[in-house]
Length: 64
Image 1 (cartoon, rainbow, N blue to C red):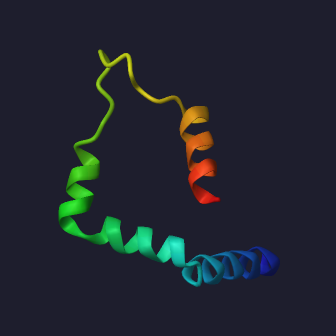
Image 2: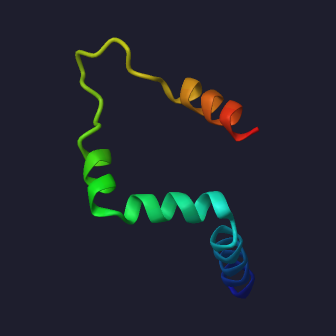
């Protein structure tokens, strides 16, 4: 159990020291932005919905 706690702590510290994660966290903690994110749910009639693999691929492209 101690190793799990150490691993979780290391992961949390890594995330907090990651600039991209910090910026994302600041954005979603903004009430206006988080409200907009909540209203961006996929419409079941929308044929242009992005599947997970496409989103992951686009994220990878933009991360370079």
